[in-house]
Image (cartoon, rainbow, N blue to C red):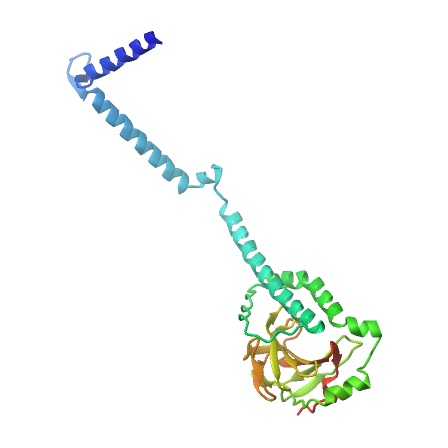
Length: 300
């Protein structure tokens, strides 16, 4: 160990002793002995030149890799085509997550209605639907939500299937008739109520922007967007009566708002996926069972 320390000290002393000693590198012509090139060298100057050259070489190598196709061979860099695919997939997954979240909230509200859980309070606004700019994205979301829509129908019509009822019993009809109902919109009815076709409401056709009004006094139970039915509003009325307005264009009320009969709540449109016709799909429910709206109101 002592011998190594002595050698290190000896080398360090030699470096310090020769640090400022000048050396001259001369290139001469052998025949004439004329000086062709001369370079004055010192250990300090050699250190500066070598260090600077190393930094310049590293910088040029970095630029060459970063701005040429050579970067594809360096671990950690992504192919531009793959990056675009990853970004596209991220947007599609985000759209699907938002659609699933909104559809789950839609199902939760129906569950609360069927179990008599009605909360009349101010809530946060439902975020607007994420636009699906590509037809391919719409198809993916629609396919992914097919099973969820089936489960929603099973929950909604559990009472109907259980009792094997095709129409509303007369005592319940009498109870619904005690409520004064006004027509939800002006237009032409082109699709009637049909339990056999699982069409649990009526479709009223008119121009885009036609006002839609509440059929009776109540509270907005839900207002928002679902992938299948588009923009929709659900109103809770007295006597366990619920009115549902689907495929609307513009929502004028938010969840928790109180409305009276004839108050504008939306405008007619075609925001649902199933049709492109401007219309209102209107449903009327009593105690968790759908009833034919035509039997309780007159549509102009």
